[in-house]
Length: 421
Ligand code: ADP
Image (cartoon, rainbow, N blue to C red; front, side, top):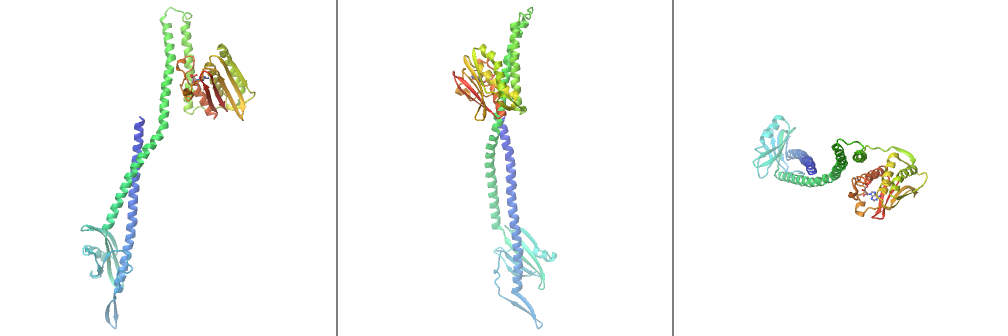
């Protein structure tokens, strides 16, 4: 499922990237071309004027004493030249009076443009394919005291065309390589972004599977016991007390489990808010220890309390009580002989609750996972222990209050849970 999603996300990114690359490359290409064309047009326009001026200076006509004199002054037409272009100058009779053509002569082909300029009395600029090559032609119309004339400046664009096609290839190559690199990167990044979701999903699935499994066990026990009762058609309630007791105690297990599951589900949805108030944590611990004393005494375990008076905290009363119950209950539950010591004190400006026992301890491998949901170090102790949700709830309560809950333990020596507030 995640593999498909991963590929899908990369494909979406890919489409966006390809479109982006296409528009950026096409944009760069068109913009460069536009700027270049505009610049060229201006240059050709200026060149047409320069040639026109040159023609006027080169062929001066003047009247002297009623006689028309024509004088040809020798000026280098290449002087001040800014553009490598050919040209033709037509007088008002459409006669070419001045021209400089390249090896390929195209003046006759573009003559209609000059004709049009005379007719419309305006300039034109266009690109035409003549023979094998493209030509850029600027036709400029002049009308002043020397009469009407048209100057045509034109250029073969073969070199530029090669350059443009080279630019196109380069942009396409950059576009393709860029897209491939970005696709690989986006595949890696989406994979990274999906990792926490994948893990949460996996944890959630495990949680549902474990929860169903844990609910199934008491349900099966209830069913089996009720089956026995039902099969004894003539039996009284008293006669079936043992089976009914079994079923009843399992409903309590289920109720506790569902209660814990609800807390964690709310915690996951961030629905569970803290109901903060100021209260004496010393009193809470005292109270919890008192209620545990009977169970401890039953197991012959000494429950020692070392509680500093009046340790006040600002926290969620119910949750902090629950946390204390979980730690102290576990200490008693997982201790066969010896003692459980509960201390509450102030240490370096921090309030610290320490629940220490001389019980079975937890081995190093299990220590890392002890706060995980449904994690039980010794699965065979299922019935007397819980289902492995207590410590994960305790940890969540501590985290939610921004307190730290840590554990130190040695197998067969004992465990020490420390809550720093
Ligand atoms: P459970 O409901 O099974 O007690 P917890 O989440 O409270 O679940 O504890 C998880 C596991 O951590 C227990 O199954 C047990 O193996 C281990 N554990 C917890 N507290 C202690 C302790 N004080 N001493 C030894 N093992 C402990």
